[in-house]
Image 1 (cartoon, rainbow, N blue to C red):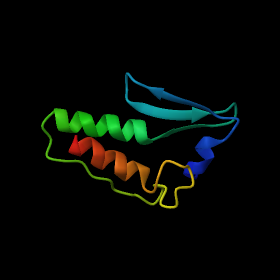
Image 2: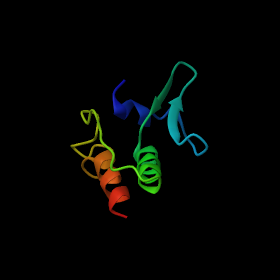
Image 3: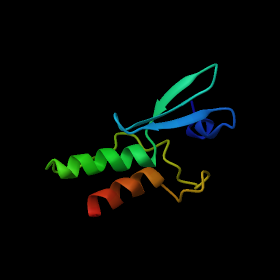
Image 4: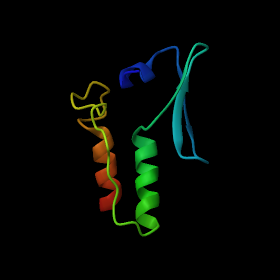
Length: 85
């Protein structure tokens, strides 16, 4: 499912702080995904626990064209900002 489908007007989006995961659902589908909040939380956890870094295996769904109005490459940007701070 394309990332932009998650912003569907009929979908309910939720970030579960206990498991640091985002998901969206309608009566017809459910999808778990990484968004800015999950990437930021997971990256901060890795840094705070002494890991040497983080990486992304696939950035093809990161918003290069700023279609979601969060800036170009919002997931990579969140990752970098979380490592830098």
